[in-house]
Structure formats: structure tokens, C-alpha cells
Image 1 (cartoon, rainbow, N blue to C red):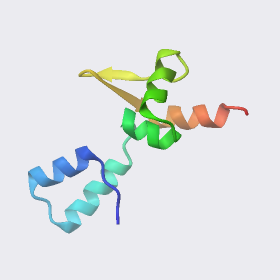
Image 2: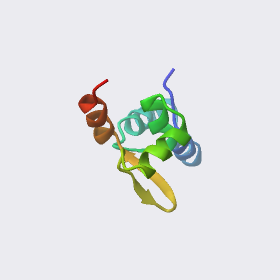
Image 3: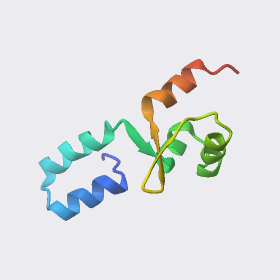
Image 4: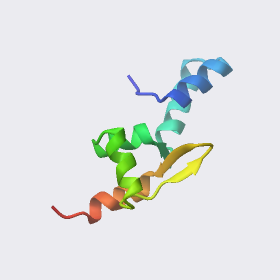
Length: 85
């Protein structure tokens, strides 16, 4: 089963998509460049609080739109690739 996010589910329910259209919509939403704080926390395997703290400390760059933080997936990948343990 394909995992959906809240935006994808809302969009598909609002517009009455059938199963083929829903699969296409899932592909579209799974390939998004911009992700929410919750999605970034799952991606980084950190809590949402930890992600917000990383933004506050300047370790992660986020953009704010309508009062919500959004993260670029490519930047998060680069952050992981360039980190050292």
C-alpha cells in the first residue's frame, strides 16, 4: 500500500479521484521537493521538536509559508551526505 500524506489525502477526497487517479496523485505527492516539519522529522528520524531546534540553531535551512516550515528534500539529503560522525 502506498503511504500518503495529509495533503494528498485531502486533495484526492475533495476531487473524487478513482483508484488509478489516486495512484498517479500518490506518485506526484511522493516526489515533492518541499516537505513539512513532520515529513522532515520522519526523513531524518528525529522528533519534530528536534527538527525545529536544528532550524533555530541554524543547522537546517527552512522556508516559512503561511506560518508553516517547509524543507527542501535535496538540502536534507546533502546535509546527511556531508555529515561526519
